[in-house]
Length: 219
Image (cartoon, rainbow, N blue to C red; front, top):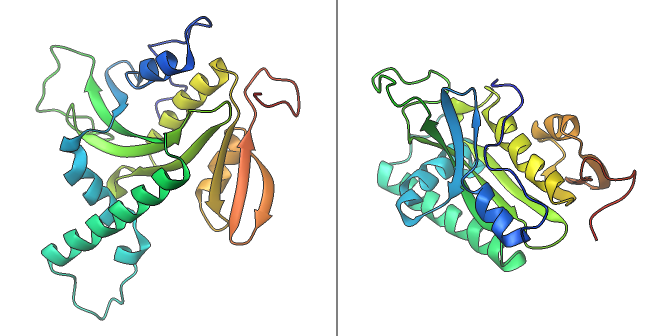
């Protein structure tokens, strides 16, 4: 865990939300040595996003152990199909949603590239993604996913805290939905989210901006 993230590109009250979101996409945070960076996803990230889907989708992880493993080409095709379906569904419901890639950024110019951090990896290596919609007064977190080997290290919570700092600066409430069995439910409550509706198996949560009056959300 890197502790409280220090966002390097702060929010200025006079800039518009679109300019503010643009500055967030270049934010870095971490321990001052190897930082984490959030940037907009690009075409070159397709292979990584498919690997991420393959490592996180229950459709590809919960196969009967008595069955032979999927052939690499089959697994890749299924991951691509699942990724395309998920992204199309999100874009249909939230047309202005965007995908951010979480990756390592080396802040130490003379750092030995052959000695990557055990928690993150070599500079420039993508670790995960965030799908967000910050086009309206109430922002929405659609998804946060990390590679299986990068979980349980505080990296995802650091990324979320950095994004929530920006939401607070914009005085924006944040909403998300989780499955009631999701292990992320406890983390979201620690980050200030409260359950607003519980319709099994889906839990609806919302977090007001820090500094807002109790019960207040952005208008």
